[in-house]
Image 1 (cartoon, rainbow, N blue to C red):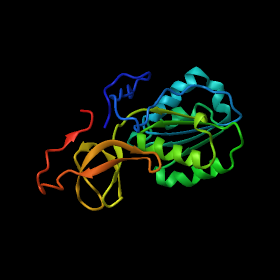
Image 2: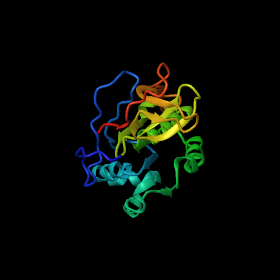
Image 3: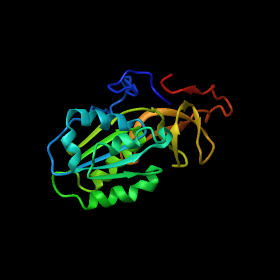
Length: 213
């Protein structure tokens, strides 16, 4: 789902999240930082955040490794990112297909690596977990949300993960329960929590509405 909130790039892909509970992640704006190496992981409109970063400091990309997952944007951003001249550039079909590369880059990293994450919440949460498990300090990881506000949801009943949830309530893709979308966020799982909405009154399920409509 695309936001109509205005952003820095022509894509206008930034979204102003409403106030929420403490566990909900807060995102910033990517800024150039000194470092010997720079790992940049983005999906879909997250490419716009990298392009904006390049406008602030193009020299940064000479030591950058970009891992980009286009998702529904196809070839829209691929050549523009390649033109930034990164030291390494990888385009992956999905996060799952890219995670082994991400892990390898992190395992080979030296002290001083700066990590930049941009795009959807699902991508940023999962990639941040990988970086922190690899010993990257939290302060060396920047995040900027762009594009879809679809959520990665965990069913608290069957523990299954449903990706790219855009409505509330939604049907768990694993057990079929009707789940209420909560703002409670698990950093360990990089997912929001979904709770059965009709447990006390089976079948009494409100019409789903689009998140942040």
